[in-house]
Image (cartoon, rainbow, N blue to C red):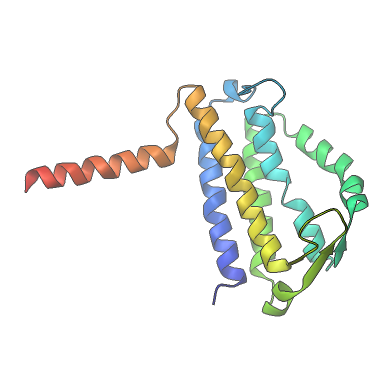
Length: 180
């Protein structure tokens, strides 16, 4: 059965890949924006680093109902935390430490806690989610933004590490086939 430890391990894999992207992009490219009005590389990585914090709070405090005032109340703190991550080194440290904080919290959740239902005020949809589904959402959110980062890597002339690895496997398979 897929449970808390599985969520934590799959999140760690996602975060490891995000950290690799953050390491591969040169510090002087952290200000790059794919288009006017969107987050820069550094801002996007800071957002990824900070964003699981609200779920750590919700699940750690066993909050069972969320409305817009919850997010509005957290917004200034989240904004300040993201803005404090001004350098590549600070961002990398936050990605590592905060990612592991989330993974440890997720791994420690009991099956009963994962089955708890959290309600959301209208117009948020769906109006309820299990904690399990919410934890999976953290990984989905990060993978969404990681796709953006991979496109930004291409725009600044870098080949994303996952693409390089796939290309290497293909080349090895072709070389092996040619030797037969």
